[in-house]
Length: 286
Picture (tube, helix red, strand yellow):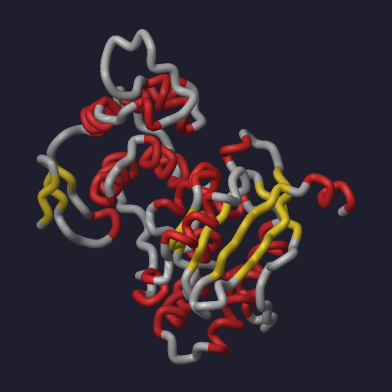
């Protein structure tokens, strides 16, 4: 049994977990009031009557209407998506335990577990590499380990893909989160099949790696469509130079073409550095 800030989260699996303590409304009001608006450039801070974020602030940061967010704080039930809950977790600067509590209160289940990052790869994510990521702004950039756990990212990446902030796994999100199929335009041809080819390539080079085995098993178990694509036995090394399209909530429904730049630091064969460069000229020629 784990106690956290007055909440009683009883261990278990799936939808059977219980959460005693404050209501979702109480938690959300408390969480937003402790966040400093100065942490978000562009939010007006003068003339505020109370500390913390307002409902309007949270609505703006999560891409929903103020009325919609206000109804959420009043306890109105709705089909909250994992993508929205992750955007909300990011805006409210929730800890891992608080994010878990949010999921349990809002949809009755904990967030999907990420694979455990490989220790050696995580240690190689240093200050210099983080500066490189930050210098790619406004283009999103991130670093993954051998099994595609996101172990480093810049601010634009967090804005485009809030799931990555919470120890996300690129492949698990792409194949196991239903929203990925809408956000990755032409999902099967441009994203899923190349991703499966990359997994097959990594498995061939690291046949004894248990984390890669687990990743393969989980993804293939998640969908008959994925198993059908896997049976094509395609092998794909990397996506460097590929032109693909995204439709993420950050762009409010607009499709964005991106040119993928994929790199590896010379000091490590465990890390992948990915930059998503907006490329409207490339899209026009395609």
